[in-house]
Amino acid sequence: MSSYRKAYLLKQRYAARMLKQRGVHGIGVGFKDPAKPRKGAAVIVYADAATSAAAGRKRGKAKSARAVVLPAKLKSAVPVRIVRTGKFRKHGLDGLKFRRRIRPVIAGYSVGTPNVSGTAGLIISDKDCPKSRYILSNNHVLVNENTDRRSPTLQPGGADGGTLPRDQIGVMDRFVRLRKTKPNFLDAATSKPFRRSLLRPEYAVFGRVPGYVRTYKIGDKLKKVGRTTGVVTGTVESIHTDIQVDYGDYGGLGTITFKNQSVIRGKRPVSLSGDSGSVWLTRCGNLAAAVNFAGSDEGRLSIAYPVDWFMRVFGTRVASARKCQLNSPGRGNKQKFMCVQPLSGKIIKSLRPRKCRTVGKKAK
Image (cartoon, rainbow, N blue to C red; front, side):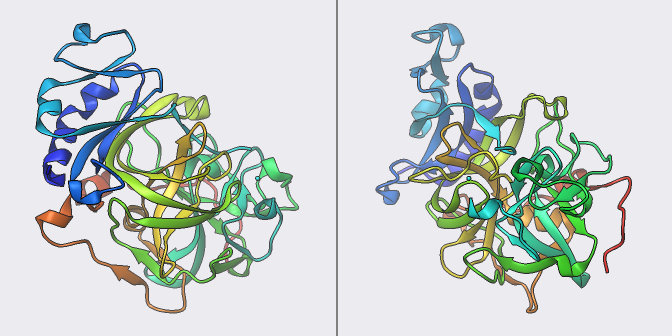
């Protein structure tokens, strides 16, 4: 039985090389057999349906131009499971209840700019100012083309009929700039309301979110509400996944790389256009777990990162009347590499959020 530590270290070693192959979109760590978790770990490769696997050190040894070349040392050291899927894309424009106007705004509903609709993932506050209120969502949902130009926040978003000035509730406040040539870790931004009363710390359908988990593991069952797919459930299929996401012409980014992401699989679509920014919750307890920002073409795979990363980078917490509830990471080598890991201090420092140039009206 292969260990998760061994699978993780091999993924770290070969991910960059494999992502350069045509038709390969991601490489991470998951179960060898999802139906039988006790069989141990495997390296998971996300690749086009037209590809086939071939072992070899060089591309020339592949059986065809579309073969996935598995380095001989990788294939001999741990099981490798190839998951067929198309490209992963950011989802920000294009479901019916959650597209309507709602006041005060709660998590799970449409939000965006005059041109785009995504999802308000959570209502959060600064750690040192519990009475403050912000919307947690994605950069490509709340930000003007990945820049610090002033970005009005509409609810509902522009793709759902939201217009200026009638539906503007605030402005983008801070964001993490997406990088074209360096690895990315989170697609994240916050919006500050004109008035605190415009936001209510509640999550559509599921009600109050008492806090967030610092970690989750392969095989965990999650749930969420998104602007397009509505109420859905999913299972964490892989973690530590290095993945390429197509942003199209947004900010001139094209296809960019994200490191150590989570892939969450649903039995039906769980991440379609407009679901970007939605937050996965634990099946029991309604604790925030992961932030969705992209998905496969058919929507059955959600690409997400731990909400703990967002909270640490932005210095925030779930807005709540009670003290934030946190679950600690698993202890011991056996659990460590089955669980998502916190960002290092060095990475957090490199991801320091940028402020919007003009914050507009002050929140009260």
